[in-house]
Image (cartoon, rainbow, N blue to C red; front, side, top):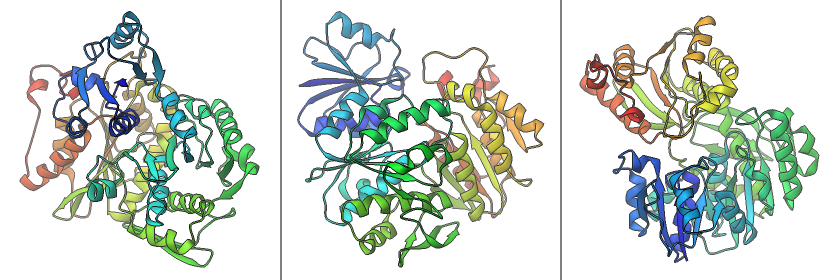
Length: 471
């Protein structure tokens, strides 16, 4: 079978593409980033190793031999790929429908929630793998141990058993399409959709699960908390005691069993507790859970240390919604004297819906000695809502007395962050979707080492914004 993935650069799409290539299908894919000239991404290299053909998003990757086209919610109806599929009479399928097919063919643990899905999915997978259960995984971020030990990209792996661990995404409502063996509900906050809409999604999701485990301390999940077992940081069937958090990890006890995780933040204690609750339902004992989690080395771009210079550490993180930003900055405060943060919002729709929530969470996260640099929203292509800009968040923060700065030029921000950094500081690079953010973090570290004094970039000198998406 020949399958074409539109938007293959997305983590969910690339995982399914890899899975089908590993399974013997002929796979091709297109992406806006290829159309914009990004040909040297690490993901492209790995996909090519699996003989996946990569094309610009202009219809050139589809032909009469293509049997199926897979789309995501980010693909508009007037996309050239959809038009070409219609011309060639090729059937299309949403990414979630293809994932639902894999869910139905396995004994699936589906991890849901506004925040923490990727980390918790990885933790559940690591515990089951350590216990010798040979699970498969399809997730939204590369699992570091899979990269190091299996030589794969890390967001998908095919095990030998019928167990499968996935993320169940609520952002586009596709969560209601999955009918897993076990559903894990981490949290529910306003993000992508209004709370009442999301609650409807989660209610249906829990109904679809053979078993469910729900965070009993999450107010927005109260309606479904009685549907199965519960977990929480303080209450629930499974909860930790004697929790001690540091800037490098945490220790706690669950039902008499000591645990240690080597990733920081109270939110990761919650993620680990949820993973343990899921593993217990799969007949893994607490001691095995503890041993597996102590070995857990994390996932890509989740509080990933790029390096340190002169006791100044640069950390790269995927945080992009208000509550994730708050959790990540709180973890950084455990580790450093001050936090100097750069944040690039990942979607105009997110700013449109959550400006007040961004202002509220960042205002309580950025301390008096800290500083936040905001740049414009990442734009890979598509429709831009009129009048929406991250400058609206900046104005709200300034009205709240927050040390914040807005600039469309990332090079100027980089220079200002490097110049402001002092020994003991944590420099955070925050944001999702944009594949150049990790490169920005690496360049920030180099600017500390070389003490580069960049005043402006060539594009800005010419009167153009230097952001990658405008090149």
